[in-house]
Length: 417
Length: 159
Image 1 (cartoon, rainbow over the protein chains, first blue to last red):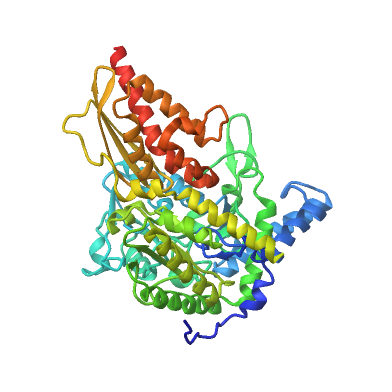
Image 2: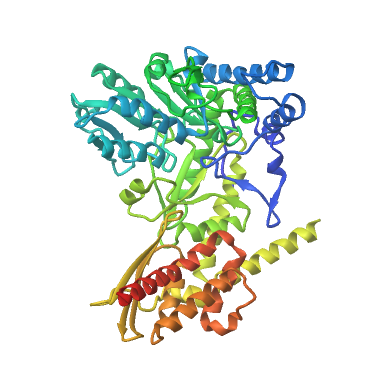
């Protein structure tokens, strides 16, 4: 089948040459990697930054008086500046490095949350949260006697805001914990409007940006959020690095999360005082190498330009939706258009389990996610045990979508035999 | 190069056929003993949190013998057909024999050479799953659930 294909806003052929793993084959077939919402592949520039650190200036940071330590410290802090600029944070001191987005959210729940949430307070969240932005708040509510208020979804897995955003708030609302772009159905939420309403009422907003920061321009000052969490490995960077952005005053007020080395100012046998932010929240030796390599990933994305990254994903998502709709017995989840969704398409064959589909696609070299996608409340709402999910990034092509579609047809035929 | 690729592809096709043998697909399409018992002696739910597979095994005991068995749940073809095959394998067996089958089955799935898969009868059909490590837990879910049910029964009776 031939179809007119839109031209990409990115030079994908050139981009693909930067990713060594895209050369590999799986079961004799070229790898078609469509599991980017899970984790993305890494360009040579990121891998080389890791190797360069370990081969030429490996040292601990913030405490070595020698040359290597100076270089490592400078590179680590430069990465913090790159992250701050990438999301338009007012200063690098607003950026705390964690292990992942989950830890960033837990940091807020354990420090700000336990210091500020009281019995009877309300935490507003949604039915489409990833477990990482749901379980910490549910636990906090259980511990403190606060109420977890959960916004439900429409038939197209968008937030049910028919009664207006403000109807979900009360004078006890203390925090809104909301995902910017959902990881399974792709829905993009009006987070800036939530921030406006929250601030009008003196509440704070935490945005889970794990699926938005890698895929579209995100400006924390424009969104006016209080906290933003995301992960390096979902945006070309290494595993083991997460980011918490927080307004500086909040970081100053919040008690520390983990205590020990590096986060202290003065320790006596009786008392300890805390280091300045953000060091107060980075106890122990951080993940120096991976943070530095994350800086290289941000450089790479800046070179591509985030508006073009978003355009590319919109094109590929629109094409995927169109091709999937031509298949029989395929149910597609999420918003119908690409404006309200990220580069994620989840679907099911009405009579095949996503794991069986996943295994069959894998045999064709096509890597997708199969399962609940860490969205069990959402799966319950959809009434399915799981979904098959294709998710895209800068190196994916429309030809790869064609391979996906053919592999799906083959999977269907296999189980019909 | 092309030949090596073709060979690898052919091997993968063969492994897929091994994974989804006809007997497995038959159990998936026409599950045996699917449903619930009117008054089970013991009922146990097994969950695979990673992929969301769910299997409940129910046993109706007469003395030491599994006189009735049923399963229900949801999940992939491997998890559900494995549960269906389990019910056929343990019906009419004593608790001790069911325990032996559990050990034999898990040994087979771990690739242990201490067990002759042929001694497991139809269950041998699931040996092809071993080539797909991420799917092994789908095949063993029902069996681990059964083992928990047997353990609970033993504890209850020990009281």
